[in-house]
Image (cartoon, rainbow, N blue to C red; front, top):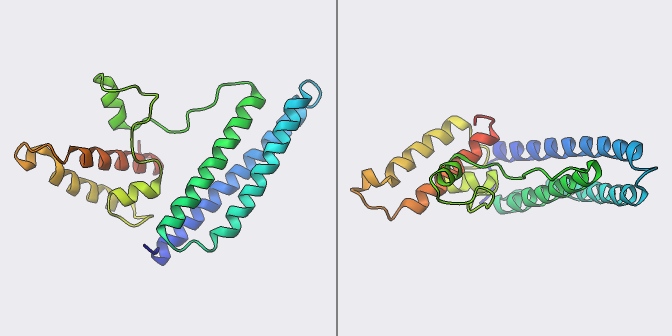
Length: 193
């Protein structure tokens, strides 16, 4: 599925912003490593410096390929690659600062209630939706659709899939859970949760 021009530009802008933020964090991290690790933990400093160089190379590759992204599947792959780089940075940063790694994926509301009712372990992600691109796709929307339209689409689909509107038929519950997860992820992306 090809991007609409406006949505494609939103995707590109978002990816460029994430790369810029990661680049700034990497520079700050390298300064910290030089100041705190160089004399006391030389091996760790060299490992961190090499890792940050690797991150910079990978970001340059993504920036070059970003201009060619025209389809949703290509956008998903690019987003996954950038998430991998962000995870790599978190690993280096945590080792360098001698602290536990941050949790990468937030617990969404659906997962919270499932765990609260005894239905699962909150540290094990059992969901299917791991990116904004997947969330838009699950809701049947184009990437970058405004939150108001996302909410409207979610409500319409949830109403259709809910067992009460299906005379007690629960066969659509997996799809209902999937769109709830997608909606929660997009809400957190928009900073609304």
